[in-house]
Length: 394
Image (cartoon, rainbow, N blue to C red; front, top):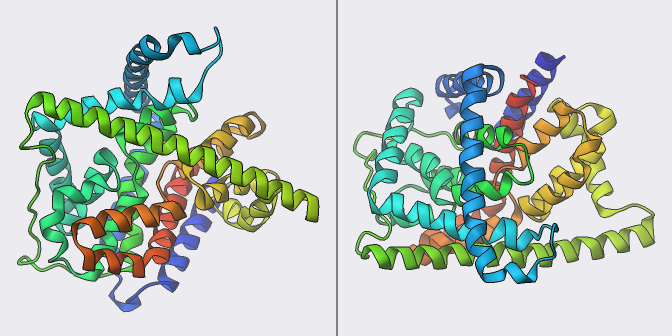
């Protein structure tokens, strides 16, 4: 049955991607097949081998320790505000992001991150035959985040074609910043978070190949990368990283307050008028998609509601909802939903990416806004693909 649902999920992604394609005749199956094969191997290794389990365990322990160390600083400042034995989401999950942000800033300052990102990006380019810039964005988005990544390629924004710009933005929306991975791991099983980050890089490029096929000439395939914070002194970089981390924590907290309150209001109105919660309505709409991905029909409505919640709000709101209901799901459903939730594919991200590009190049920002809904469509298909691949091994 797992194989059958893998095929049905794959057909769903390829059908919906092809229907929305700018150039169906230009779709190149070879790079798609290669990347899909790589995804299958990686998912199997990470989820079903001793090496993969050990690797994910090491990553999980590392982030767990980093979150623990981050909390020490939070406790020094806010320790007296917490009730003994009670966890506070803002203090224990969001504020440690500041510490993770500092570490990322240091790795970037000492040129370690740029070397890793370029190396992995060039290796991917050799495997899938796509442009160096596309693969660089796919890798760096998973580390730097969906808006920061464009700062490193701002010189090239004005030169790339509209087609390439769509692919770059799809990768950015399909990824998640490593700065908040630790926060995700407090709500989802770490093995699914790590697996999703790896698979999403390929899923975004596969979907982009379906919706937006093109070829890049050698003359166009240039990669000029600027290193963030290059002109800052070490302690200036530390200060900037601290402030960046604080901005992320405050932004996520504000969005949670606004979106959760709004969802509760909509739920109240739907329950009052129709006798159904808004999440249940979303669940019924998204249930067929969840079923084709491999989720049993008995759980499809409930799981579909959580998955749809991510699209209309954000992944944090959906993860908190999932955490409350996780015990009701089978292990397979929990794994598929978890992987689906690990990305920035939601309506709010359209504005974030558009604003990030517009700040660097106004004309290209307008172009991103023009295909914003199609960008969300593509990145959602990427999430469906990653979750479908994982379902095959659960």
